[in-house]
Image (cartoon, rainbow, N blue to C red; front, side, top):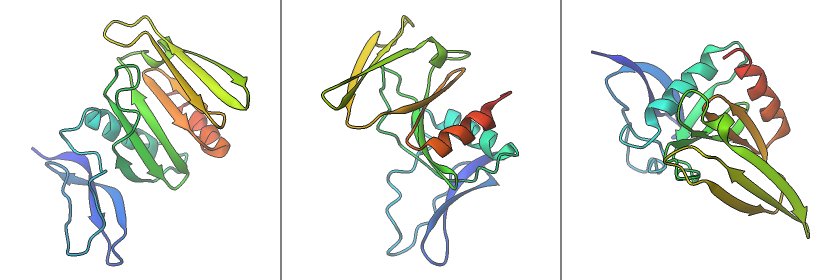
Length: 170
């Protein structure tokens, strides 16, 4: 049975792109001298199904997002949640941690303070199976979009606005 899946393709110029196609699994086009695809999220990775579904959701809305690439994320393991992915889109880049449905991300409390030019963030939750507290220190302010089970880390104000608009009503 074929399913709609994301796959990595290599254009004639050797540029990687993600597109939707009917395929039984992720197909990776390999060629001599092709770019390294080791960071691409693969079917066996935690969060793969969630990331593909999230990508389809974004592209299916009339907000104009085109997902170019879904990659493994350094946020995998955030608060003990292994399901995470990084998205490279034509509207900006961001990462998503996929918490338990239906509202796992909304059950994470985020607080911040600025001390000596550093942005200190505390994340707290009482959800079973997750780390109850995580703290981080950043050189710049962080942006978040929280929607249902998705905790989205965004590094650009325009992308944050576009994501909020895209997810309204989702």
